[in-house]
Amino acid sequence: MGTQGTHGTQESNQQTAAGATGRRALLGAAVLGATGTVLGLSGPARAAEPSRSGKGLQGLPVPTIIGHRGASGYRPEHTFGSYQLALDLGADIVEAGDLVPTRDGHLVCRHEPEIGGTTDVADHPEFAGRRTTKVLDGVSTTGWFTEDFTLAELKTLRAVERIPANRPHNTLYNGRWEIPTFEEVLKWQDEQTRKRGKQVWIYPETKHPTYFRRLGLGLEERVAKLLHKHGKDRKNSPVIVQSFEPSSIQRLNKLVDNPLVVLLSGAASRPWDFVEAGDPRTVADLVTRAGLREIAGYAQGIGPTLDLVIPKDAAGNLTTPTTLVKDAHAVGLILHPYTMRNENPFLPTGFRKGTDADAYGDSFGAFRTYFATGIDGVFTDNPDTGLLARADFVNG
Image 1: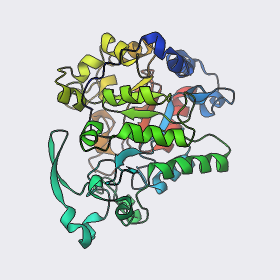
Image 2: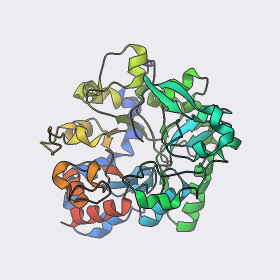
Image 3: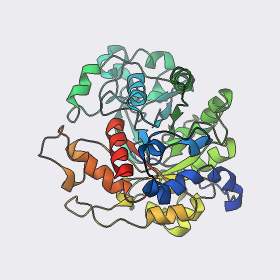
């Protein structure tokens, strides 16, 4: 997950709410948990451990702690080092990963198709000529792009820390891990489930699907094919698929039965598929009751930016929560907002401590404030912090 990138034509996927009810129903327990059960829990056991009898998302704790790109507060993101640590720290779900294609059609896990900031590609003289400038969702971007490399070429690269100014300690691990493929992630998921005796969940995202479809590298069909191959394309499969482009989720809704989530960026932004299709609506339109009802026709949840749950004022302080949680729950959607991080620059102003860019602020206080809105879970770079914050909240 990361910056918005949303997909082209609005498909005429006018499924009725009733038609989507079956898959939404499996999230019922999570919705109930956020709106009532969490506050009524009498002890830590129910919050800290999934229900052994529940199927699908019903078996997950609420609020759900989702390791954002793994445990990216401690390891370079979208590496098996980061994914593995997220599980070791207790994350309920691992966001593995942001999916982008190679030139030969494989899906790999990178935050963006441009890999200059997340790999050591600049140190490879054999790839110097691949550096180029492209327009990615309307933004001119210079660097190296996954679609210009074969999988074999990408496997010669190694991951590096994306934001070293905020996470200098993570640079210790630069060069240790290669770029994972989505198929490797699916196999790793099975391996870890066996080893841990507990179902491991993943939360992949289709990145810039309109952009890649125009290049003849459609993402949704590739994702669906791999999920089907590994028997993970069903409503109770431990794979939630997300995208900033509503039409990508509509397309996936026709291909798989997995839980699906529409990501929502800032209120004034427009999903890129809306831009391409000439749809004038903004995210502010999508979070109205009518917009949420439409989303509920083809998805089971939304992943809003935290600012859509509690806006900030001009000074960066939290203001009054919106009605988004209540409105989304009213149409059967769960909410997994993004992204909680421990470092000062990523926290609301009132929760910062000092001015150091890599110092931790009062992230526990911030978690507590967001949990109190009734959200069903949260993406965080620091899953251990999130789990402790959940325990405080549930038992407080």
